[in-house]
Image (cartoon, rainbow, N blue to C red; front, side):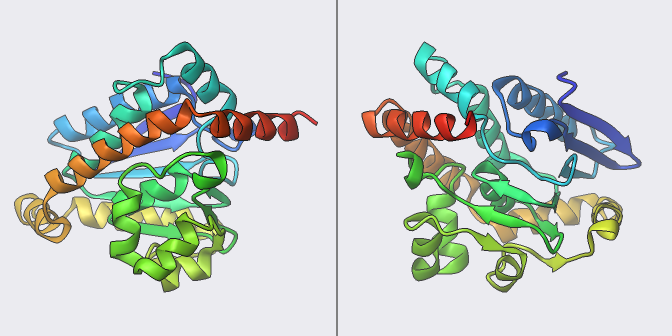
Length: 252
């Protein structure tokens, strides 16, 4: 498993830490592969009752590593069965509670992953962004379905079409974040909540979660449609132009 994804057991909680702080935990294909292994472990291991996901170095994640992503797309590896695609599919069908710890940047998948979490706790400095349209792309991880359901169409349009950033207070107001917690207490607070979830009667917990989330197959089908559009968009000239502009800014 990649040393950029740290996995540890904390009682009945499986802790997953995005550990690439020098790049604000931007995700590469190798990191997605390690995340897929961690999700499979958490799903299959009966002694795991909840998953806790966080980022190292004061950030959750800056989203996909654009250089790595562009290299994969150019070589054809950004395919239907890419590590990132497998990860978001696994999120849709993961059956145990997920708790997220959001500090600093939560960009792209850093925001859309929160839609699949049961509890999300954020530091006051957390800031969120779904910049897909700005990059010539379409949303992923089911967010084009889940954002309107969660926030309403008007707010979802601001966040997905205008790609407006928003902070922790707004995230709490619109229902993406459960609570804002001081940074020094954030992970301990989230871990306590994850342990509380893991300690509940397992059958009742999983059944209640399924009932709350509704038909996972409808979400899964929508995610497949997104992935088709995403793969088409990523090969478009406007996406390539946006990627290269981003990389040029980053390299200045």
